[in-house]
Image (tube, rainbow, N blue to C red; front, side, top):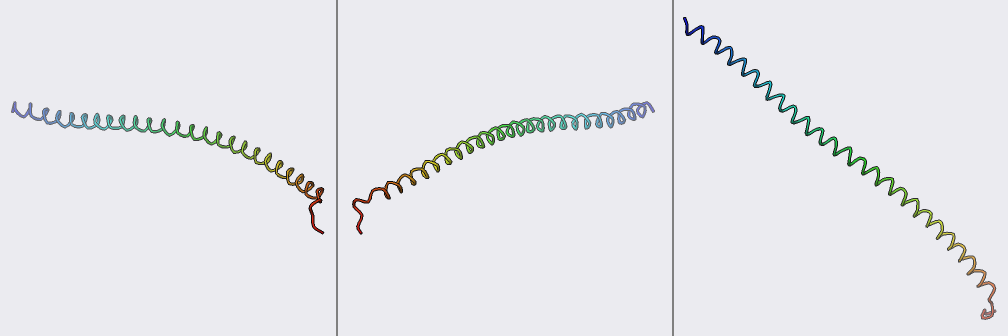
Length: 96
């Protein structure tokens, strides 16, 4: 009879401790996963800010290139007009 008084609480405590250890294991896994997710979230946010900075830099550079293209086009149009005027004005060597 004494053995039953000892064995029953021992088995019950074994099941209780098993449940507690399972819960602790699960909570540890959850904390590990949460830390991994937090690290990935920081990396994603950092890469997003870097990408946005690069996009704005690219847009600025593209705007500068377009301005330079417009200036070059104006210069080319101006030179073409001058060359035509020079060609029309100088007819010393033209054949009839």
